Image (tube, rainbow, N blue to C red; front, side, top):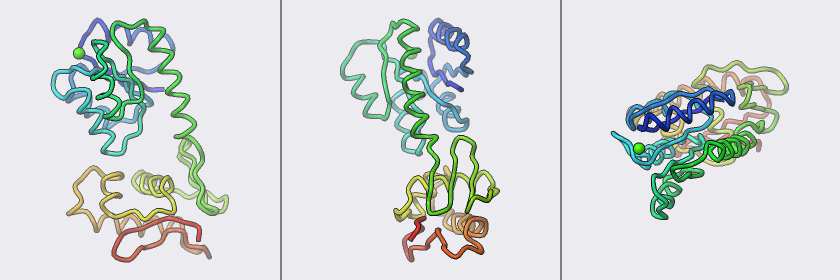
Length: 223
Ligand code: CA
């Protein structure tokens, strides 16, 4: 389990790091909001401990941005004062929990464990559409029990579609969730990846799962 701590107070990061490492978590630290945001965006973490007041981007901004980009990593917000405003802002921005400084390490650990448990059951449930299965914990995809090999992007695209099965997904939605670029230059790329996916997932099958919704986008469904 990998945890990102974004916090500029060295005394606190060192105490959190030691404690979490002792509990066998892997810990990465960012002392600055901008660096923290980039790490959160570019590396996959199981949980983020996020301070509210940071140099560079604030904790609220970071949280809002990563949620806008579709990242569901659980976030525990650290607030300096017991202010209702700060808690509400944090939770509004998409934090899952908050902790008021100073806190006992035991308390942080309890919340980390509880969020990781919650995340596990949501994140790691095997997704199914018809006889297509995707296991987020092993990243294995099977059609009709037979393994399908996908590239990283193909996998991300399929996972996003299967998490939102039976819903029409516009190209803008797909671009925002699966790619980090703006949409305009992008519509072709999505179509190309859909074609790759179809080839691997649907070709030769009687029941084609990936559907084109003309003029709108795509959806995956078993009908
Ligand atoms: Ca701070």
